[in-house]
Image (cartoon, rainbow, N blue to C red; front, side, top):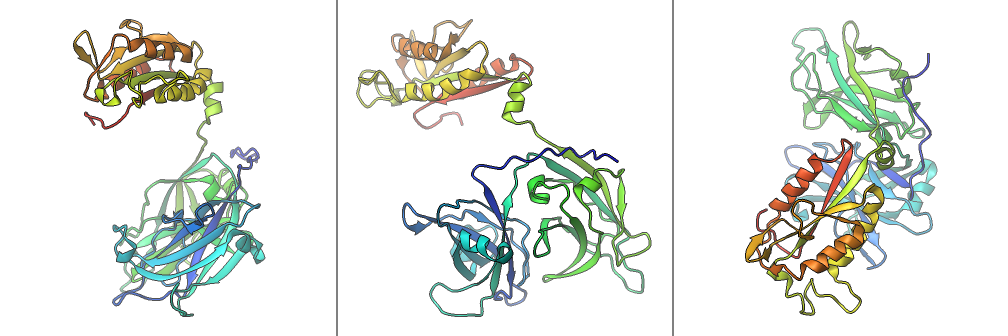
Length: 435
């Protein structure tokens, strides 16, 4: 039977990306009444400043009450073979998930390494000992990092999943607080979690919220990669018990099934099952697909003529024409306009000013060519010509109101071609008065 799951070869990304999958063992417990709630933060080393970046490059999710967490969220990093990429993994117990201050969290350990050491390890998996930067101790546990090149894929997989009859039979058996985790075969060390649902409390026949996941994360762009789904019961304080696990399957196999599709979840028997109610594959069009399909791009420009820019003839003013015939506004117009005009078939661009006074009347959406019925000019040079000419009849004023030119651009977009896309370029010097 021919697969209904289209899958042309994936194009390699440039530069390649690596996803680092993380799990920890034997973390220190910083909580009194429960267990630590760990989260891993990845920091990169900046060779230009010879210091570690102050902000994390990526982070895992927070897992509650677990000293041996296996994280679902992989950490993406661009892979540069030609250089040493130093990495620092820091583990915190996140008691206050709404706080952005490290001082509000409990430090669990850190370790520094480099990308080459991880990829060069057996199976591209490195087992690293967590340490304290100021104290020598070996009781902080381990972090295991598995690296895999991330394949490029635009496809998104959409799922709707439910389960039936999850309560085990017998006296005093309670309904579970059930969630499911999707695992993929990493081809080396076993199965890695790639998606974890929310738990549904005390429900025998849970229906989880529909979700979407990128194909690159689900199976790393390979529809023949082995997958499985595990249903667990969350008992609190980090205690989780397996209710049942599906047989191994692939996306390619799943695409050939009728839906809803029922899957057994041993050791549960009888009517217990996991039901895949929805399975669709979507592939959003790329920019080149948009253009090839007849899409067009239109540019609309609005320039700030408020007094805060400074007089036209004063050096230092944003409107001052320097000896090379340019200023900041004209440079921006050239930079953006020369790119976008390639995708506009007629190269006619509406150009407005705002915040200026004409004949004593302040306007926040006046055509720079002086023609209200047809504010368009031809090409980037037409935009620049209208801009310089406007200085002869526009008096700088204020305030800085954006709403009128946004409404003009909205009206233009509504009148554009069915597959037209309109970009409004607003050039301004400062604060907005009508945010």
